[in-house]
Image 1 (cartoon, helix red, strand yellow):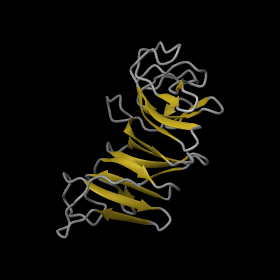
Image 2: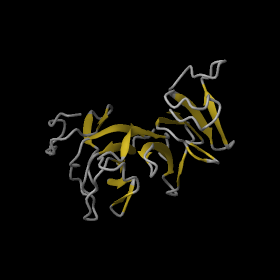
Image 3: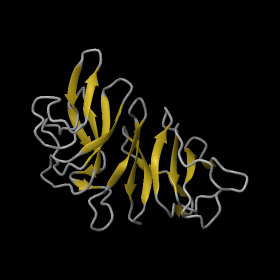
Length: 220
């Protein structure tokens, strides 16, 4: 919300993430650092765990708690029980996804989370200048790229990740033409894929008989 009167102390003049408890009829400012100070950049695209404890969101905040300035949008996780906020796309103030040259965008608007908050997916730029889909195991810190094959990364932009409830499957859309099933060379064609980590497969969905796409978006 852009409103500044949802809660006391919201003085950053930025779009913030709030959580409303329908039972208690209370509103809580989520886009704060662990020291409870509001973030100094616009925050958005929030997802809430099933028990309401965790909230994942994207923010253009530039402040970190290690006296280093962040320069791009990053993914944050707010633990409402412990009162902590963790930047999932930076380590010790160093951003994992620096974004393209001369850009302030490191992570895009797309973020997803499983109901238990174990798995988090998001879209971010890689060193090849394309956006890719990352899946992060919050408990182990291990992350992988979903839009790739054994031959390498997808050669186009990827976006809109969606996770299954257990995190074993992730779907996304991309204009890449090197992931299989769709006609090669169709870089301007949006396509949808599902990666099944348990089965070790990457499957194109929404294919017409001529091999073109009938859908460009999927939801698990």
